[in-house]
Structures are given as C-alpha cells and as structure tokens.
Image 1: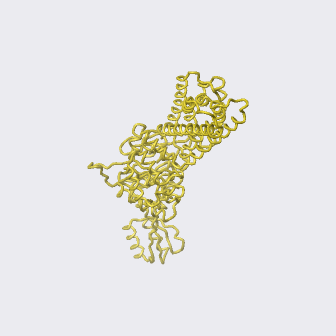
Image 2: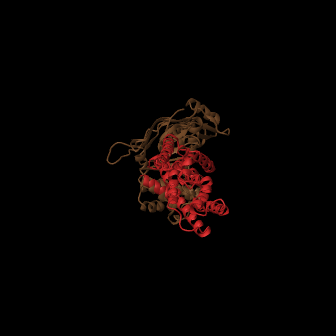
Image 3: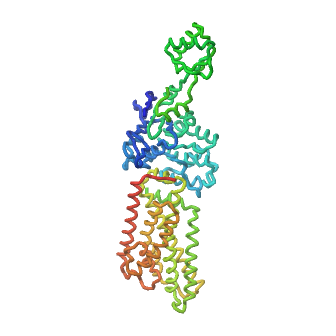
Length: 326
Length: 245
C-alpha cells in the first residue's frame, strides 16, 4: 500500500528550542497476533501542541497502537518514543506520570462516586486532591461528583474518563474513541472539550475515531490507518488539498465541446445526461482557459460545477483502495 | 509508591458488597459450630477449647479459604469489569505493586475476618453456650497464625482471579482447597500445601498445637508459598499484554 506523507508541519517550539518536537514518535512499530498483523511498521509522528486525529475503520489497529504507546501491550517490533524518551520498562513510569489516557471506553468503579473514582487515580498518580476539583470543573461534572458512577449516563462516564486522564495536568493525552456511543449533543460537547485542551491544559492530544468528519473540526493533524498501515500522515490542510474533485460541465453543443476537449487532451466522461460532461480535477487557471476556449468555439457553456470531495470521501477512498484518490 | 497503591485499593472497598460476605459468612459458620458443640456435649467437654474445635471445624473446612477466594475474586473483578485494567496498568506505578497492594488489602481483610470470627466465638461461648470463664489466650495466637497461614492462599487466589475472569472459579478452588488442606494437614503435610497451612495455623479441630513448636518452619513455609505466587504474578503482569473487556 502507498503511504502519503504530509510535507508541511507547523514549527513547534519547546521551551526556547528552535527545532520542532514530536511528542510521540514511533519507528517501524509492529504488532502481530499469530499470522494476523494488527500494526504494520507504523511511523507515527505527533507534533507537540497539536490535536492529532488518528483515524481508521474499526479493527484498523488504532487501539492496538495506542496501547503500545502506553506500554499496555508489547510491540512485536519497532520502537516508541514519548515525550522525548524511549518507552521501555525503565522509562515507563516517568513517561506515564506525564501522560493521561482514555483507552477503549471510560474506566471506572460503578459502586463508587465520581469523586472517589478520581481520588483513586489521584492516589496512583500522586497528585493533590485540589486537582480533582479542577478536572471536575473542566468536564462539567462538579455538581454530580457525589453520584455513583453506575448511575452515570455514557456521556457523563466519557467525561469522567477525560477527567481521570486530565489529573496531574499531563503533557500528553491519548484518547481512544472518546465520542463512541455519544449522542450528537454529547459528541459536540466532547469536541469542544478536546479542542480546547492545548489552550486550557497545554496538552498535546492524540485522539482516535473511525469517523473523519467527527474529528475534522477539532484536529490540526491527521493520521489515517487501515489494516495496521499508515496511509496518510500530516497537517489536515494537506489532506484537504486532495479534496479537489471532478468538474461537471453543462453545454449546449456537446459534440463541439468534446472536440475542443479532445484537442486540449482532456478526457471527458459521462455526466449523467447528453448535455453534461464530466471532467477530471483541473487547476483554476487551466479551467478558466478551457471555459474560454469552449465559449470561443461555440460549445455554449451553460454551467461549470466543481465537485469537491468531502474529507470523508478521501478517507474512504484511502481506506478502501489503500491509496490516494485521483 | 506501594502506599499509594494500597490507598487506591482500600478506596475501592468503600461501600463494596464484599463487606456483606465478610459479615454474614462467619455468622453462619459460628451458628453451625455452636449448634454442633451444644448437640454433642455427650462426646465433647463443656469448655472453650471444645467450642473452638467445633467452630474451626466448619470455618476452616468450608468457609475460610472460599472467603479468601471471594475477596481475591472481588478485587480483580473490579478491574475486569469496565476496562479498569487499562486504567491501572497505565498508572505510573510498578505493575507488581498493583498486585502486592491487592495482596496486602486481602491480608488485611483476612485479619479483620479473624477478628470477627473471634468476636463471634466469644459471643457464642458467653451468651449462647454460657461457658464459664474466658477463652484461652492461645486461641488469639491461633487466629493470628491463621492469617499467616493464609498468605500463600491469598497470593494464589489473587493470581487465579487475575488470570481467570470468572468470579466463581477462585471461590470453588477455595472450597476444594479447604477440604484438601484438611486432608494434607491431618497427614502431616501441612508445610507442603498452602491450604493446609491455613488449617495448621488455625489449629483447626484440635486442642493440641498442630505445629508442635515448629513455628519457624511454619512461618518460612507461609512466606515461601506467598513469595512464589507473588513472583509469578509479577512476571505475568510484566510479560503479558493488557486485555481489558
């Protein structure tokens, strides 16, 4: 499969350094279960300060990758670097002290209150109790802190999961499908919560989803994974550049139009009606010249419509064919 | 770091249903034991030692090891449910400390259980059987020895509950362990089988000291068995991938 690597990345600076820093870096990361390869030579690069959307269909290898980042499962091959340190037995605790995570679905002890659940995580992370108030405030659960988590709705549990991850003001947040199972209002709330993380908490966020459109409002970097392989990685705008799609041309004289297009060596497809022609993606300048020629040579241009591909279409195209759409 | 893990484990027991088991099971055991004692006074002497033999006959055979199994299974069940494995294993603590904290918390619960068993024995003897005087101090020593004797079983049951996600298995293994412990202890193999150490420590169903002054080998055996299962758990936690459901 072809990997499309983004070329442009914003310059990220860390404490006066002039070089960009990736807060997550994996190299040739692999995980196999018997003959099944769940993660296949993955080179993930998550810039510091970014909200990185890790997108792929169910079973693509997102959760496995995230678990390997956190040391929850052992890679078959390759390396993981988090916060500038290699993830291994020696560094594991130091890295995890600065990392918050929500993996697979929100954890929690149903017979305990939200306050008690957060206290358990605070104990394990050795963070002061006042941190609990802060994170409850951020996820808007302060007034429900004394309610047992077993009585929480899924949305509230997801928010509690985020609160657990936020304890100790981590530099890195790893969130695995935090919008899973939420209603549209819950998704919206979670989106705004996460998009504010770099500003409100100073954290880099790695967030996964199987839906690109769910994340495109909040992420600035994207990695698309399928069958364990990274198909695209880079700034979101690089992905958007691939969104220029076909052009639908409506003319009065299709025969003449085809003649002009043939001379210009532009292939014209069926537009769904005799007077409609489907042209491939063209640059704005080329398109302007072509319309001029068609008009001058009597094709009778009635309409030109650029069919912009949604990011979802690009994503589907990438994950279904394994390569970029034309 | 271990203290933080213990704090977290203790917090998980707030309002937990496990306390119901803690309260009720020794009561059932004390009821059986006292009724049996009172109905067999033709064969038994009417004294505190004989009441002890009847209380521990049922308690160590059918209740002690399964209760440890219930405690262990409950503490791991909390992690098996609700993806909490991911939560605890992504915490910045030693993996082995997570297990060790559970071990110490179950040991603490076992100690409390023994205290409750003693209180019920005292109440049954004084208020129900109306035995004269007070129980011998040795009984308290036997109860504490029972806690020591249970350390290997606690570690074993926790290991079992960690690997097998079923709640029933550690409890049933505890039940089978109680019976096998009684058989092993009665044949002089108390030090070779962790479930037998519980029986020997408690001086179950005996008036004479089952250890016969062999306290040091007993303590050593308890520590070795616990150490073996704790080490095995630490190795597994380090080597295995986390699988949350």
